[in-house]
Image 1: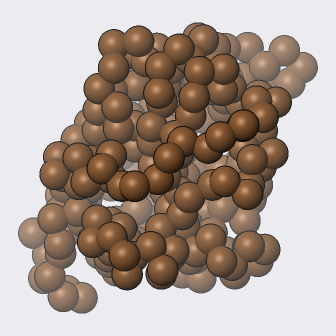
Image 2: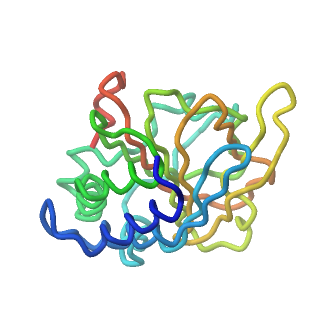
Length: 232
């Protein structure tokens, strides 16, 4: 895998490239963000993001007419509330232009290629999956590693709420103690990327969540993904 300087140079070059058709504003914003990202290496590789997508798209996502899930169960696992989760499916892309723009941006071949160059993951057989999360007070996630059919995980935080400043994704060491290491800063249009692996332990809840925590989770997943209806 290229060293960090070469990877960032590749990301910057991709913003100016002309192969595979024009980039939309989402793709341009993300590639610029990735080129500026802060790469941390302990206890696993992750990249901290700023201005991950266009500001107008943040506003448009926040304006989507999806209510927070009612009667959510907070047991440390998202899958407990699978029935109420919201994805940028083809149906939602038809209804809401922002869903289509974000999907088109992240599914562009140059975006995929640059992600591969920067992170070392392989997206050659991967499908895009984007979830819109609205986490209410009391929400938390236990330390876990994403399943390995996920080839890429990115979180984009959306809300501008001082009460959520310490409620970004928590980074942990692994077993037996799952020691807390750091948190990705939570704030409007900030985010974090990591590549799921056996040591990519992360969580939510080292700091209590007292506000309305809204975010996008952007994954690339393999063809082995079970719930195909979630895919973009």
